Amino acid sequence: QVQLVESGGGLVQAGGSLRLSCVVSGSNFVINDMAWYRQASGKPREFVASISKSGSTNYLDSMKGRFTISRDNDKNTEDLKMNSLKPEDTAVYYCNAELVDKSWGAWSDHWGQGTQVTVSS
Image 1 (cartoon, rainbow, N blue to C red):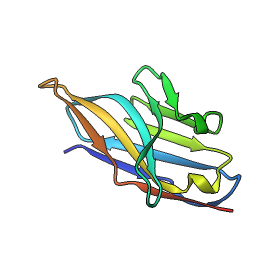
Image 2: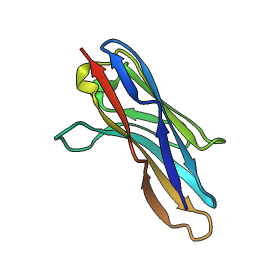
Image 3: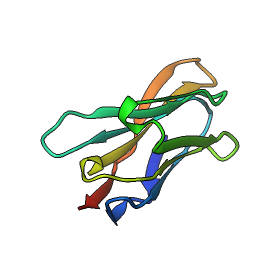
């Protein structure tokens, strides 16, 4: 049973920083791409950042220079360091991972339960 668990959300003032973490637990899989998405109240879920197994990163333009995604392939974790936070960054942030089953080679997409980030003005 694969499970993704996020941590690190909370309340922060505008201009502050937070670090989100996600750990992928389970067995018999390889993690390909990992990503962070977010969903503000009343809005669709949107892409924030992604990182490949080799470490290549992509960001939504509005996050470039403020957010940094990283991962530890040995620990099956990914982090999102968020600096210069703005009230419009308030959302539930979700961890995402693309897994490949070692036995069958099947690909599957997995999500965490989300962690709330609230930025006050």
